[in-house]
Image 1: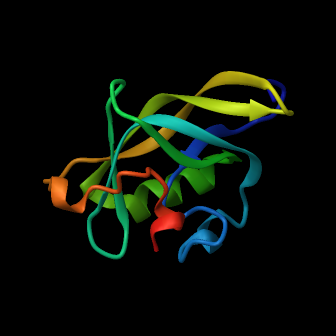
Image 2: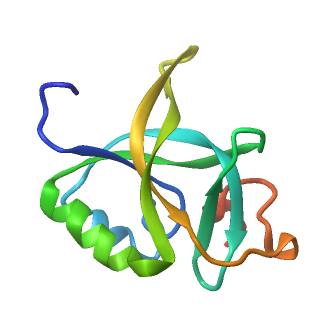
Image 3: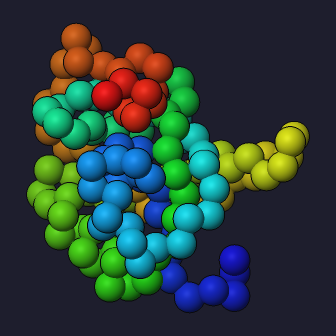
Length: 126
């Protein structure tokens, strides 16, 4: 992957394959499923992720995107989120696990524990 041009991103909600906004990833290349540490909340018809090394895993997908796609995703996520780097755990094969840095959009707004998705999987929740 190091010789490819683009950015690695991790998506955990509506941008995942099968999610309501997966069409926004049409120019992205799916790499693998993965997990990050944090808390996932139902905000409305979409989730919000808050990084937390002490929390459980949040399921999502790892993609390679070009500059145009990442700019479009920044615009889509808007001011409610900020794009930050995070360590993603990616499973390779049956047993091997690697850790890779990727961009993720972190929720900046209020959260309520009553809206927490304890299992950490947005698509498993909707």
